[in-house]
Structures are given as structure tokens and as C-alpha cells.
Amino acid sequence: MTCYYSNADWRDVLYTSVCNTDGGVVEAARYLTERRGKAIHPETLRTRLRHRDGQAISLEMAEMLTEWMESKADGQSHALDWLHALNGRFGFSATRHEAAPDADACLLQAIQSALIGKAIEHGSLASEIAQAVADGRISEREADAIEALGRQNQRKTEEIIQAARMAAGKS
Image 1: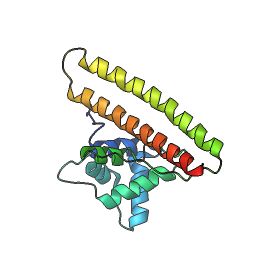
Image 2: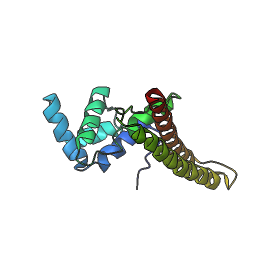
Image 3: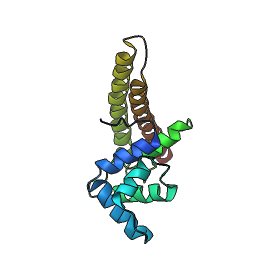
Image 4: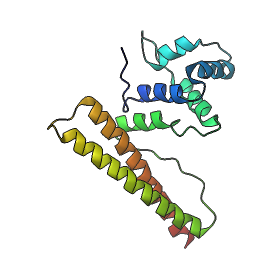
């Protein structure tokens, strides 16, 4: 039987992100063991990440796992997805504030790039919603998919706002 992992529950998102990172749970357990100076078996970590048998992941471990995912060579774009899901649970959205580019042209290009990304994400969100409501109801999985795309959409909006504010500050 295959387990269903939500795109909206932060624990499911963290577990999925760790599994999708090069080395997965085994390397994550090794990293945590080295960082904390206290051994954790990969299956114990998996149980905690999946929130099974009364076991739960601590915020400290979630932070370390995020650092581990971000330290990977390809940047692991999904490293912060769990944090976005946690914020979303309480009606918040969050975005990373990048260092300001030096040139005005870079700022304007950042706004254009963010706008194009926003248009693509908005189209995906609209398509997901249209498919979900086609049968007159929205299932839990459909709601999860809508939420995940909606959160991505929020992050793109924040990027546009941030770039516009930086560009306005340069003029």
C-alpha cells in the first residue's frame, strides 16, 4: 500500500523534501548524528518525520535538516517547502529576502522574470481549480494540490513586491 503525503501538512512536506534530497533519510540521519553529537538511526528519523508511533521531529532537527538540504550542490529548491506549509497552516505566507542586486537593470529584469513566473504559476493554479471543481466537489487531494500551487503563487507575488520596492528605492 502506498502512503499519501499531503502538500499542505508541514510534516509530510518535510518528509517528502528529505526523501527527495540526494542521500535521502540515510544521509540526513548521518548529518544529524554529526551535528548533534548524538546518534539517530535512519529508521528512527523516518518514524519521526512521518509522525508515527508517538514520535515527532523537533524544530531543532527540522532546522538542521533544512540546513542540510540547502547545503547540497544543487541548492535543493524544496528545502523550505515545509516552512511555507507550516506558515500556510496559520494563514501566513513567507518569502526569502535575497540580497539586493547592484544594477537598476537587474532589478527591472527581476520584476519581469518574477511576473512571467507568476503568470505561469497562476495559469497552473487556475487549471488545477478548474479540474477540481469540474465534478462539483473538491477532494482532500485536490485541496492539497490547490494549496501547494497557491503557496507557490504567493511566493511569486512576494518576489514581485520585493523587486519593485528595491527598484523604487534605487530611483
